Length: 262
Image 1 (cartoon, rainbow, N blue to C red):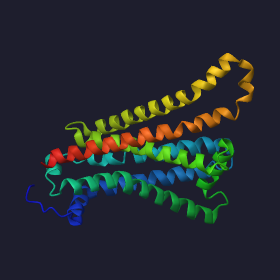
Image 2 (image 1 turned 135 degrees about the vertical axis):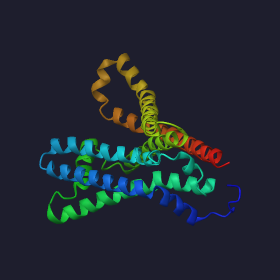
Image 3 (image 1 turned 120 degrees about the vertical axis):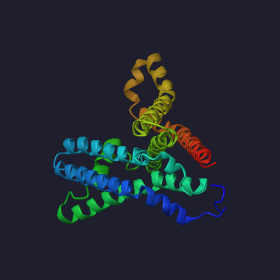
């Protein structure tokens, strides 16, 4: 491995793609089929607002899980030694694994989802189920007139998803046996950590409100606007901590690949 040139080589990344290509194509077919199914179920439920919101949120969560477990594909090849000996540098392997996990998988899911919504909108007034879902969600959460809060929520969702996906990738790359199960366990562990961060941030933001209610229960009816504001104020703290953890996990992933390449 020491004979590798120091220059970054796209062709060596292509060799890695070729090594995993069989399983990547299978994953793409499965992911596309699930995405289309989620869309069709959401479209079928779009006539009922409550039913649509219930199935819509479930479908969005399912698509999120597909992203979280995207890196599980690297646990399938059984010849781990051949995988380690792939003629690629640390930078090339890092680019491939991280690029696939953080860029290729979500872009593929978004492309299939957007294609479904685009085609569906041609044949049905409710065909753009994503726009319909976003509209209903904005009406419920009252975020349509709060672009900053909406952006903070979106950023928090992105970094949270990246943390869980990076947990899957880290577990798969470090495990020697039972890599598939440990990859799922890595995602579950990262999800648990992300939940703790969110709950801790919410608790810190809402403690003053609860203290005020305990001191004067009569003010509880006047806190309808203060509580949502406090919840939104906790998002930056949760997002920064989660983003920092993503960076830390990525550093550990790169160090793992460096140890395997040395």
